[in-house]
Image 1 (cartoon, helix red, strand yellow):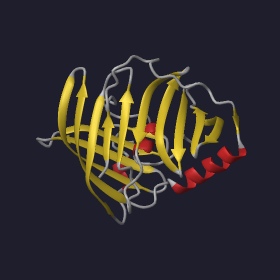
Image 2: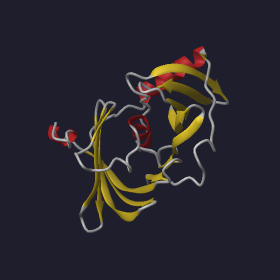
Image 3: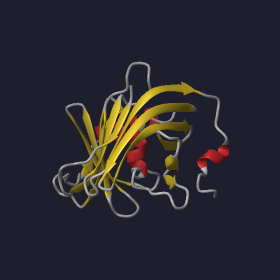
Amino acid sequence: MLSVALATACATPGYLRVPALAGLSAEAEAAVLVAARDTGVSGARQLRFTWSAREPDFVGSGFGVARVEPPYKARLDLFLNNGESAAIAALVEDELRVPGGLPLQLVPPPALLWATLGVFRPGARAELLGGRVAGGVLDVQYRLPYGDRVHFRLRDRTILDVSRLEGEDVVEHVFVSAPEEGSDYPAEATYRNLRDYRELKLQLEFHEQVDSFPPDIWRPNGL
């Protein structure tokens, strides 16, 4: 069972701090290449889940569908229990696409959203800053095109957690556990927005392999 939670942190930005990594060991460089190869989207899949959310001005729940397709395409649809749409987002490589007028607050940035699906993707334009392996855990950091850093921790080619940093302060965080046997998806994941105090929890009901999806689902913004 996959549960993905965007959990409210009882702290302000700066409560968690991650220093910059300097240098890249040969072991870490090899581990990064293996993780990128082994955690990619392996086929067209559809996931069904339930969700609940809590924000400073919103509390709600419902059901949702996630669709993923190689090489790097994902779409997330959240519905309230009455069937009304609560959020729509498509992620094509590193581009997050949402319909005009719908809020982005419930959706993590691309690198963190990929992590909730167990996919290690810092981004094609992310700059590798440094990495190390200690105790079987890979720590690696990237600088994103707009200046923030993202810090990944992995074990055995599986993502443990990902943090988006401003300076050394963690402002967003994703924790994921290992996939269940026979599944490509994390058993559970937690996303925290430490700045905005937002929470979203998803629990997977089932997932299935499909042949493909209509190409227009990756363009919810109509472009």
